[in-house]
Length: 256
Image (cartoon, rainbow, N blue to C red; front, top):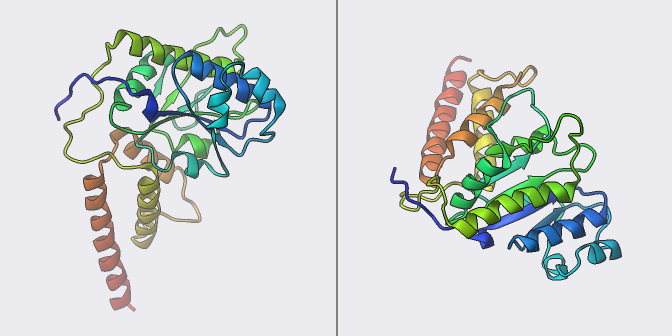
């Protein structure tokens, strides 16, 4: 692997709000984004949008609201992304790679040089679900004071966008991104197809018991999300799974 310093590309970074309840938070998020040079806002099934309050809370960032992409599912918002970050307020049952905003911004900025990047923010009252967080490569946690840890949604967005802005201004980006890699990183959509195929294969060879799956698939999602497969590697693995399924089914047929 050849790693080189990259230039952040804000046009490749999208902020994704999932099932937001308060329209004012959507407007304030748009303002926070524009303050820090970001403009790609995705809204997944907002509960009250469009709404006048979103417009007036956006101040002079109405253009960010007007260009916001409103979708019904998270898959529609991040299906074409190669690097996905999910914000989380607490540790989960299965630990995931977890960074603070400053360290996370370095990875987001560097990966944005040539890839589509998404940063997910969950519901005001409950955040992102475990399933939504398992779609991410890493998790982001803002280390607030334990005396009062609650952050307003737009405040959290502002913190993350500020760290990205500071990196862009300094142009001192870390070398996580690798533009000389020989194949593009796999998209979220293609990874989901792989996970379905993997689960089917593990069931066929009786390694996975659908009646008692335990935490096998979430842990495998964490593994492959941490490694980050490129499209060529993904095709190789899909080929292996296909052959494994073929021989497993032949073996079952001959044993009858």
